[in-house]
Image 1 (cartoon, rainbow, N blue to C red):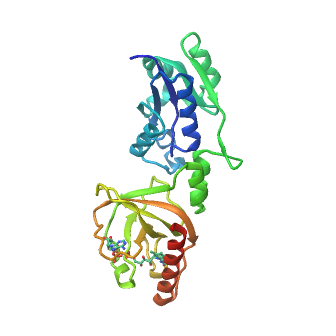
Image 2: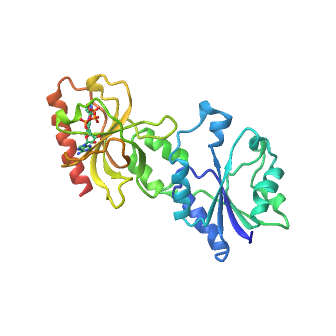
Image 3: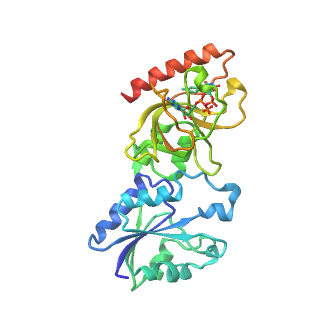
Length: 295
Ligand SMILES: Cc1cc2nc3c(=O)[nH]c(=O)nc-3n(C[C@H](O)[C@H](O)[C@H](O)COP(=O)(O)O)c2cc1C
Ligand SMILES: Nc1ncnc2c1ncn2[C@@H]1O[C@H](COP(=O)(O)OP(=O)(O)O)[C@@H](O)[C@H]1O
């Protein structure tokens, strides 16, 4: 392998801060390939599953977004209990040196090796005479430092607009459309239902304006949608779902299709209505707002 510039991290979400780290790394040696080293599963999922964060992106999206941000190659280190026992020196030996890095770039809060004992300083010492280490400060958007935790917290409170500003794109949920309670068509608003995956981040319960894209139909563009996240409290639903009504369409056949739902703006919280007429009236108002917001 030729020399390279290496960036290491979890990169969950591949947000604007991550993109800047990659851009800066590339600028250190534009002639060298940019290699990103990332870990899967998330180390917390392996070490403390009960505290593991809900992820902003799955592995495929992470790889795709890292490549879009300039990575020539993404090396996925399978994180296991065994990997977690490697000392910082072992980590450098086994993961970094084979990549022949001229520069290694990490975030200033980067920790690595057994019990996270390795710091930026450790990496510098281990790299002496072998590679240059650069630690980058966190990038801020509107005075707030971008990090995956901030974006998760924003989504937990439904602030999809804030999440999008830090992500550098709208937050996306993807999945395969399942059959629901078959009530949507009766109400006049058929909705494509996605189950909420237990390990992925999803915006707080509520109603949003956004876009639905059918991923397994090549060339299909995004369609404007009014999106409901929740368990249909009006009907005492139990299962939490992401339901999207594509505006002005009744002809869609989406069951079994792979779709993506992009969240643009939050409209309101879930309401437990006492009658169906009131729900339908509110849905009509949601659709009108969605139309305005996406125009
Ligand atoms: C724009 C929009 C807003 C919604 N708002 C609510 C709501 O406030 N309360 C509620 O109980 N359900 C709400 N829903 C969910 C409907 O109850 C649900 O789509 C309907 O029961 C059909 O469910 P089904 O797709 O499983 O057939 C909303 C759905 C949409 C598309
Ligand atoms: N405008 C639309 N937006 C979303 N899904 C639609 C639309 N028109 C038709 N469909 C289809 O209808 C299904 C939803 O109908 P619905 O009565 O809500 O049933 P379910 O309870 O199974 O979701 C979707 O999965 C999709 O295949």
